[in-house]
Picture 1 (spheres, rainbow, N blue to C red):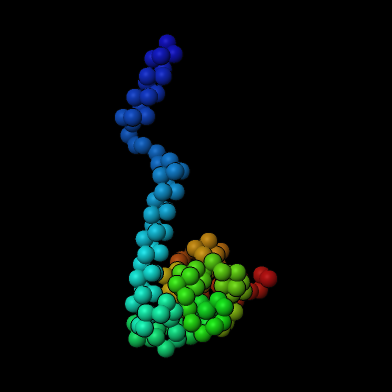
Picture 2: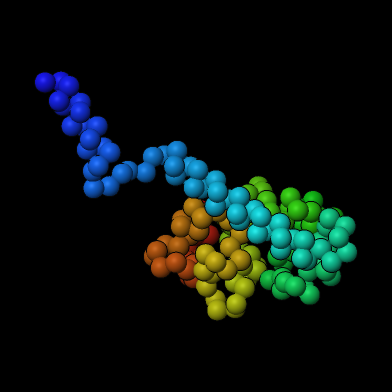
Length: 156
């Protein structure tokens, strides 16, 4: 009898209505997405690095990219006036960037609001992680309004 049960379970797993995604499949998909995003950022960096010296200065960027007010300075993690590829791709997870996203001051809010509509969309110039965004988006509408930013500051 146990052989029949085992065989039925094996058949159901192989031929059932849906095969569950394993955590390793999800992890692999996330890694591939991350690699694709890293490559895209690397390509953007190379396009912005007009003289090919491995750095982007504030003067180089505007020809191919518009900087939100204060954005260059936030990405310039070592304050040397130029961005390396590591700074360009890794600034969102840097401790000082996380602190800016956490505090979400009016100045930081303005820097993130790239289109000036007085709300930050997750695809705008959000400085934090997706998890940080969800915490600040109090009503879950996909935007952080000025009011939500004020409320998150008041909680501190």
